[in-house]
Length: 166
Image (cartoon, rainbow, N blue to C red; front, side, top):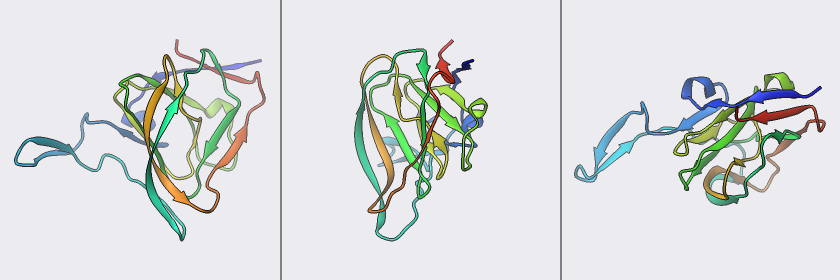
């Protein structure tokens, strides 16, 4: 039997247990640069642990997935947060599960962004790798960079879980 998860719109309240939604809606803001720029201040918190580590900024291009999507892998980063900020104004799919040593498939949640929202996964939060829906997408990544390993994987048996948009 396959458990099917239906994606819901991404909101800060629904996503709070897993991380931050990076968006301008309902954020503290103020004008800077002689009033020419409106800054949405401190919308997510970059976290990192360990010696010889730092917060880095990277880019990634993601190829689209086909729907419905069979879920076989989740990951988490025990030593730092990981943020993804879309550059192409296209919705993408976000899959998350509660923190802990293992994942219960029935606890996985799916969210779809509005194309302008980014996400910042808190340290040790389970998530699926980036899921582009229609076209290849480019994202800014803000995460911990270090010489030691910072990625735990959780494999899900094929055919056990899929996600759909409707």
